[in-house]
Image (tube, rainbow, N blue to C red; front, side, top):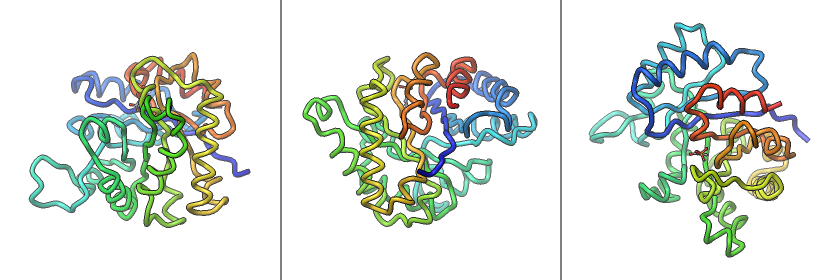
Length: 256
Ligand code: PEP
Protein backbone atom coordinates (compact mmCIF):
# COMPACT_ATOMS: atom_id res chain seq x y z
CA UNK A 1 0.00 0.00 0.00
CA UNK A 2 1.28 3.46 -0.88
CA UNK A 3 2.26 5.59 2.09
CA UNK A 4 0.20 8.74 1.96
CA UNK A 5 1.11 11.85 3.92
CA UNK A 6 -1.95 13.08 5.78
CA UNK A 7 -3.45 16.38 4.73
CA UNK A 8 -5.59 18.78 6.75
CA UNK A 9 -7.37 21.67 5.06
CA UNK A 10 -9.26 24.55 6.64
CA UNK A 11 -12.31 25.88 4.82
CA UNK A 12 -13.07 29.23 6.43
CA UNK A 13 -16.22 29.68 4.32
CA UNK A 14 -17.78 33.17 4.57
CA UNK A 15 -16.45 33.95 8.05
CA UNK A 16 -14.16 36.41 9.88
CA UNK A 17 -13.28 40.03 9.18
CA UNK A 18 -9.96 41.02 7.66
CA UNK A 19 -8.16 41.64 10.96
CA UNK A 20 -9.36 38.33 12.38
CA UNK A 21 -8.47 36.43 9.22
CA UNK A 22 -4.94 37.84 9.05
CA UNK A 23 -4.41 37.26 12.77
CA UNK A 24 -5.52 33.63 12.46
CA UNK A 25 -3.20 33.04 9.50
CA UNK A 26 -0.26 34.63 11.34
CA UNK A 27 -0.97 32.58 14.43
CA UNK A 28 -1.04 29.38 12.38
CA UNK A 29 2.17 30.36 10.62
CA UNK A 30 3.96 30.47 13.96
CA UNK A 31 2.61 27.04 14.92
CA UNK A 32 2.77 25.02 11.69
CA UNK A 33 6.27 24.31 10.42
CA UNK A 34 8.14 21.56 8.61
CA UNK A 35 7.74 19.37 11.67
CA UNK A 36 3.94 19.31 11.22
CA UNK A 37 2.73 15.72 10.95
CA UNK A 38 0.68 16.51 7.83
CA UNK A 39 0.31 18.86 4.90
CA UNK A 40 -1.80 21.91 5.74
CA UNK A 41 -3.86 24.30 3.62
CA UNK A 42 -6.15 27.16 4.55
CA UNK A 43 -8.93 28.49 2.32
CA UNK A 44 -9.96 31.98 3.44
CA UNK A 45 -12.60 34.13 1.70
CA UNK A 46 -11.42 35.68 -1.60
CA UNK A 47 -11.16 39.24 -0.30
CA UNK A 48 -8.60 38.28 2.37
CA UNK A 49 -6.38 36.08 0.21
CA UNK A 50 -3.90 38.78 -0.78
CA UNK A 51 -3.47 40.10 2.77
CA UNK A 52 -3.09 36.58 4.12
CA UNK A 53 -0.62 35.66 1.41
CA UNK A 54 1.52 38.63 2.43
CA UNK A 55 1.15 37.86 6.13
CA UNK A 56 2.22 34.24 5.60
CA UNK A 57 5.20 35.41 3.57
CA UNK A 58 6.23 37.94 6.23
CA UNK A 59 5.96 35.22 8.87
CA UNK A 60 8.43 33.13 6.85
CA UNK A 61 5.80 30.47 6.18
CA UNK A 62 6.92 27.66 3.91
CA UNK A 63 4.45 25.04 5.04
CA UNK A 64 0.88 26.29 4.95
CA UNK A 65 -0.59 26.25 1.46
CA UNK A 66 -3.01 28.98 0.51
CA UNK A 67 -6.27 27.83 -1.02
CA UNK A 68 -9.35 29.44 -2.55
CA UNK A 69 -12.89 28.26 -1.95
CA UNK A 70 -13.96 28.76 -5.56
CA UNK A 71 -12.99 30.31 -8.92
CA UNK A 72 -14.38 30.78 -12.39
CA UNK A 73 -13.31 28.53 -15.24
CA UNK A 74 -12.56 31.15 -17.90
CA UNK A 75 -9.48 33.30 -18.26
CA UNK A 76 -9.60 36.98 -17.35
CA UNK A 77 -12.39 38.79 -19.16
CA UNK A 78 -16.06 39.75 -19.05
CA UNK A 79 -17.30 37.65 -16.11
CA UNK A 80 -18.76 40.17 -13.70
CA UNK A 81 -18.20 39.21 -10.10
CA UNK A 82 -15.96 36.24 -10.81
CA UNK A 83 -12.34 35.44 -9.95
CA UNK A 84 -10.00 33.66 -12.38
CA UNK A 85 -7.33 31.07 -11.70
CA UNK A 86 -4.73 33.56 -12.97
CA UNK A 87 -5.84 36.08 -10.34
CA UNK A 88 -5.62 33.44 -7.64
CA UNK A 89 -2.14 32.40 -8.72
CA UNK A 90 -1.12 36.06 -8.79
CA UNK A 91 -1.79 36.33 -5.04
CA UNK A 92 -0.09 33.08 -4.13
CA UNK A 93 -2.96 30.59 -4.20
CA UNK A 94 -1.95 27.02 -5.09
CA UNK A 95 -5.00 25.02 -3.94
CA UNK A 96 -8.68 25.25 -4.87
CA UNK A 97 -11.79 23.61 -3.46
CA UNK A 98 -14.32 22.17 -5.91
CA UNK A 99 -17.65 20.41 -5.48
CA UNK A 100 -18.25 21.58 -1.93
CA UNK A 101 -21.76 20.63 -0.84
CA UNK A 102 -22.68 24.26 -0.19
CA UNK A 103 -21.79 25.09 -3.78
CA UNK A 104 -23.61 22.00 -5.07
CA UNK A 105 -26.74 22.27 -2.98
CA UNK A 106 -27.03 25.93 -1.93
CA UNK A 107 -25.50 27.72 -4.94
CA UNK A 108 -26.66 25.06 -7.44
CA UNK A 109 -23.40 23.99 -9.11
CA UNK A 110 -23.85 20.99 -11.39
CA UNK A 111 -21.60 17.99 -11.95
CA UNK A 112 -20.85 19.41 -15.41
CA UNK A 113 -19.58 22.70 -13.98
CA UNK A 114 -17.65 20.92 -11.23
CA UNK A 115 -15.98 18.73 -13.86
CA UNK A 116 -15.04 21.82 -15.88
CA UNK A 117 -13.61 23.42 -12.74
CA UNK A 118 -11.54 20.32 -11.95
CA UNK A 119 -10.16 20.18 -15.49
CA UNK A 120 -9.34 23.90 -15.67
CA UNK A 121 -7.73 24.01 -12.24
CA UNK A 122 -5.57 20.97 -12.97
CA UNK A 123 -4.57 22.36 -16.38
CA UNK A 124 -3.52 25.52 -14.55
CA UNK A 125 -1.32 23.47 -12.22
CA UNK A 126 -3.43 23.97 -9.13
CA UNK A 127 -3.97 21.33 -6.50
CA UNK A 128 -7.66 20.46 -6.29
CA UNK A 129 -9.52 19.39 -3.18
CA UNK A 130 -12.55 17.80 -4.80
CA UNK A 131 -15.48 17.38 -2.40
CA UNK A 132 -18.11 14.67 -2.70
CA UNK A 133 -20.73 13.27 -0.37
CA UNK A 134 -24.29 12.14 0.07
CA UNK A 135 -27.30 13.88 1.59
CA UNK A 136 -29.10 12.39 4.59
CA UNK A 137 -31.99 10.94 2.58
CA UNK A 138 -29.51 9.33 0.19
CA UNK A 139 -27.65 7.79 3.10
CA UNK A 140 -30.89 6.50 4.59
CA UNK A 141 -31.77 4.97 1.22
CA UNK A 142 -28.44 3.10 1.22
CA UNK A 143 -27.08 5.17 -1.68
CA UNK A 144 -23.90 6.56 -0.10
CA UNK A 145 -21.41 4.61 -2.22
CA UNK A 146 -23.42 5.06 -5.42
CA UNK A 147 -23.67 8.84 -4.92
CA UNK A 148 -19.95 9.13 -4.20
CA UNK A 149 -19.13 7.00 -7.24
CA UNK A 150 -21.37 9.05 -9.52
CA UNK A 151 -19.94 12.35 -8.27
CA UNK A 152 -16.42 11.03 -8.93
CA UNK A 153 -17.29 9.65 -12.37
CA UNK A 154 -18.75 12.99 -13.44
CA UNK A 155 -16.34 15.24 -11.61
CA UNK A 156 -13.14 13.49 -12.63
CA UNK A 157 -14.09 12.68 -16.24
CA UNK A 158 -11.17 13.56 -18.51
CA UNK A 159 -8.68 13.90 -15.66
CA UNK A 160 -5.46 12.02 -16.43
CA UNK A 161 -3.64 9.61 -14.14
CA UNK A 162 -0.78 12.12 -14.01
CA UNK A 163 -3.15 14.93 -12.98
CA UNK A 164 -4.58 12.76 -10.22
CA UNK A 165 -1.31 13.43 -8.33
CA UNK A 166 -2.75 16.92 -7.76
CA UNK A 167 -6.20 15.75 -6.69
CA UNK A 168 -7.28 15.26 -3.11
CA UNK A 169 -10.78 13.85 -2.60
CA UNK A 170 -12.73 15.14 0.39
CA UNK A 171 -15.57 12.87 1.47
CA UNK A 172 -18.03 15.11 3.23
CA UNK A 173 -21.40 13.58 4.06
CA UNK A 174 -23.73 16.56 3.71
CA UNK A 175 -25.65 15.71 6.90
CA UNK A 176 -22.41 15.96 8.91
CA UNK A 177 -21.26 19.37 7.66
CA UNK A 178 -21.63 22.09 10.25
CA UNK A 179 -24.17 20.03 12.20
CA UNK A 180 -22.02 18.62 14.99
CA UNK A 181 -22.95 15.12 13.72
CA UNK A 182 -19.93 13.11 12.63
CA UNK A 183 -19.86 9.82 10.77
CA UNK A 184 -18.53 7.07 13.01
CA UNK A 185 -14.92 6.17 12.17
CA UNK A 186 -16.19 2.78 10.94
CA UNK A 187 -18.86 4.30 8.67
CA UNK A 188 -16.43 6.88 7.35
CA UNK A 189 -13.79 4.20 6.69
CA UNK A 190 -16.36 2.10 4.81
CA UNK A 191 -17.20 5.05 2.56
CA UNK A 192 -13.52 5.94 2.06
CA UNK A 193 -12.68 2.36 1.11
CA UNK A 194 -15.46 2.35 -1.47
CA UNK A 195 -14.22 5.70 -2.79
CA UNK A 196 -10.73 4.27 -3.25
CA UNK A 197 -12.17 1.21 -4.98
CA UNK A 198 -14.05 3.46 -7.37
CA UNK A 199 -10.88 5.43 -8.08
CA UNK A 200 -9.18 2.10 -8.81
CA UNK A 201 -11.89 1.27 -11.35
CA UNK A 202 -11.63 4.74 -12.94
CA UNK A 203 -7.82 4.94 -13.02
CA UNK A 204 -5.69 2.16 -11.54
CA UNK A 205 -4.79 0.70 -8.17
CA UNK A 206 -1.55 2.63 -8.24
CA UNK A 207 -3.35 5.94 -8.80
CA UNK A 208 -6.05 5.17 -6.24
CA UNK A 209 -3.50 4.16 -3.61
CA UNK A 210 -1.75 7.50 -4.02
CA UNK A 211 -4.82 9.72 -3.66
CA UNK A 212 -5.38 11.35 -0.28
CA UNK A 213 -9.02 11.05 0.81
CA UNK A 214 -9.93 13.57 3.51
CA UNK A 215 -12.97 13.24 5.74
CA UNK A 216 -15.05 16.35 6.34
CA UNK A 217 -18.06 16.87 8.56
CA UNK A 218 -17.80 18.24 12.08
CA UNK A 219 -14.24 17.00 12.57
CA UNK A 220 -12.75 18.40 15.78
CA UNK A 221 -9.72 17.69 17.99
CA UNK A 222 -11.69 15.15 20.05
CA UNK A 223 -12.67 12.92 17.11
CA UNK A 224 -9.87 13.67 14.62
CA UNK A 225 -7.41 11.04 15.89
CA UNK A 226 -9.84 8.16 15.64
CA UNK A 227 -11.13 9.24 12.23
CA UNK A 228 -7.66 9.76 10.79
CA UNK A 229 -6.53 6.48 12.35
CA UNK A 230 -8.63 4.59 9.79
CA UNK A 231 -6.78 2.94 6.93
CA UNK A 232 -8.32 5.01 4.13
CA UNK A 233 -8.82 8.34 5.93
CA UNK A 234 -5.87 10.51 4.98
CA UNK A 235 -6.74 13.76 6.71
CA UNK A 236 -9.61 16.16 7.07
CA UNK A 237 -11.34 19.11 5.49
CA UNK A 238 -12.37 21.28 8.38
CA UNK A 239 -15.00 24.03 8.53
CA UNK A 240 -15.99 25.32 11.96
CA UNK A 241 -12.96 24.00 13.81
CA UNK A 242 -10.61 25.70 11.33
CA UNK A 243 -11.65 29.13 12.61
CA UNK A 244 -9.83 28.78 15.93
CA UNK A 245 -6.07 28.20 15.90
CA UNK A 246 -6.16 25.89 18.91
CA UNK A 247 -8.86 23.65 17.44
CA UNK A 248 -7.23 23.55 14.03
CA UNK A 249 -3.84 22.77 15.61
CA UNK A 250 -5.48 20.02 17.68
CA UNK A 251 -6.64 18.38 14.45
CA UNK A 252 -3.28 18.89 12.71
CA UNK A 253 -1.47 17.32 15.63
CA UNK A 254 -3.87 14.36 15.59
CA UNK A 255 -2.81 13.58 12.01
CA UNK A 256 -0.01 11.26 13.03
C1 PEP B 1 -16.77 21.85 5.44
O1 PEP B 1 -17.47 22.80 5.19
O2 PEP B 1 -15.99 21.46 4.56
C2 PEP B 1 -16.87 21.20 6.75
C3 PEP B 1 -16.41 20.00 6.88
O3 PEP B 1 -17.47 21.92 7.75
P1 PEP B 1 -17.55 21.51 9.32
O4 PEP B 1 -16.20 21.03 9.73
O5 PEP B 1 -17.97 22.77 10.02
O6 PEP B 1 -18.57 20.43 9.42
